[in-house]
Amino acid sequence: MQYQTDNNSYDALVIGAGIAGGEAALNLANLGYKVLLIDKDLTIGGKMIMLSKVFPTLDCSACITTPKVSEISRHPNIKILTSTQASNITQKSDGTFMAEITTKPRYVEIEDCTGCQLCEEACPVIVKDQYQYDLVGRKAAYIPFSIASPRAAAIDIENCTLCGACERACPTNCIDFTQTDKKITIKCNTVILATGFQLFDPTLIPRYGFGRFKNVITSMQMERQLAPTRPFNTVLRPSDGKLPDNIAYVLCTGSRDKTLGNPICSQVCCMYSTKQAQLLMGALPMADITLYYLHIRAFGKGFNEFYAQAQSMGVEFVKGKVAKITEKENGNLILRYEDINGNVVKETEHDMVVLSVGILPNVGIQELFSGINLELDEFNYVKQTDVLASPAATSINGVFVAGTASAPMDIPDSILSAGAASAEAANYIRKMSEINVSV
Amino acid sequence: MAADNKRTVLIMKEKRTVPQKVKDELKYFTQVKKKILKALKEKEMTVPELAKAIEMQEGDTLYYLMSLLKYGFVETGEIDDMDEYFYYKLKNNG
Ligand SMILES: Cc1cc2nc3c(=O)[nH]c(=O)nc-3n(C[C@H](O)[C@H](O)[C@H](O)COP(=O)(O)OP(=O)(O)OC[C@H]3O[C@@H](n4cnc5c(N)ncnc54)[C@H](O)[C@@H]3O)c2cc1C
Ligand code: SF4
Image 1 (cartoon, rainbow over the protein chains, first blue to last red):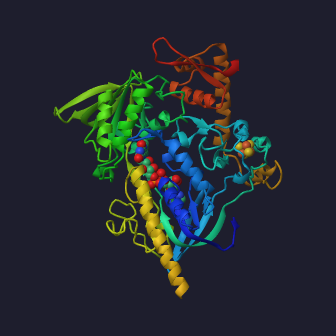
Image 2 (image 1 turned 90 degrees about the vertical axis):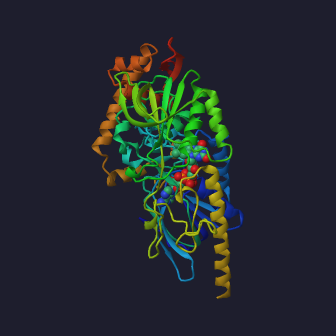
């Protein structure tokens, strides 16, 4: 353990560098405030950087995220720490905060890595690539993905054979196996929580067969298959590499279901499934795409038109509750569902099924704090204590929430929410400095 | 910059033992890689054909084949007559 005792002082600590945290950090930095932006992952960008295109405009997600990410990375008022988490956040009597910041070793000096990938080439190991949601392998010495930020290698020590090939191959000597956890204590005036969401784990619905039937995949896996940095040469069935030509979507997987502990709507699955269906019609012009839904939530600006556009392209929308999925010997899947309009139980065959998994709150956010209580709402998201007048306020004065850490929402709403959080945080910082000057 | 040029892995080796599972998986992948490259040297193949040739489950064959494609050993060829499966071949004839 390397302890640093330097007196790190920031105006704001932003926890989570997805689109919400990145936007909030950028707003504060543009106002002249000094921001520490941390993320537990190897890269910033959150889930958005992994998406293919975005509804309802079908803009390329990477093309929108990359300039934003590079603006955040280059901003002189923002310090970014990846592989980093905060703990023991305490509030002093003057309203400011102290936090312990721990950075896990990456075993690569980020500043010296040119991203040449020679280490990756030299590494003999193959393990499942978490950034491709396990569809393909990656090396133990690897750059997370081509548009990762920082675009620097990392060593997956758990799967490393310690052969030293990466270190020998690296032309800049930036690989350093002597790295250990780095801990610093910082002081800050405000904290923004932008810790985002986690995806519903579909193995919790065993009757859908995810994890047993290879051609039942999640929407995030399909998102990757449709992205320019995709795992396969095109959209393929994971069971045998066949081009699928009859794909089903099961909406509301893990959402709006009290028995699974998530009674609320995830807000984005109807629209991202409609988006993927349109993209699939472009990628696989001969394919039939059917969406099994309970209700279509097309509530945002341009969403209903987007839904109508999918229908006019030939995407089939079936109001039906899927009860069970079974697998045939050829890998095809039989969906047994209740046809809600016809009030009958039906069975249909598809060669691939995508589960439109819901959004869940991230766990463990309360434990970041010590001696102060961060309240959660009834669905375990960070509680907004004054939704109408001060939407980013939490139960701790000076701690604000941005993006999906407060509720399921899409990208535009995450950005708006980050705007509110940064405005309220800036106001708090101003008040802090006035009080501290007058004392 | 690394503490001791090109040798820091030796320091890690003193501290850490590589789990047997990691060693076994490397051995397995090395064998699979050899088999796939050997089979594709003979002729271009679809995933089911390749799976048959190397006696491996089709889904696992796809996973390893796509990993080799990602790291530049293999490339995509034409699609079959039924428009169902792509052929894969060695990149630059291996
Ligand atoms: C399959 C799919 C497709 C989608 N498609 C669209 C679309 O087309 N259009 C659209 O508008 N929306 C879409 N969405 C929704 C979109 O992904 C979210 O609105 C957006 O990503 C939310 O951003 P965020 O910053 O709140 O959260 P996240 O993207 O989850 O970012 C949170 C960040 O916080 C980090 N973090 C978490 N906990 C900690 C911690 N304790 N310490 C440090 N860091 C931490 C995480 O590593 C992550 O980087 C889609 C969602 C899914 C699942
Ligand atoms: S670690 Fe070295 S070899 Fe690997 S990408 Fe960075 S500079 Fe290249």
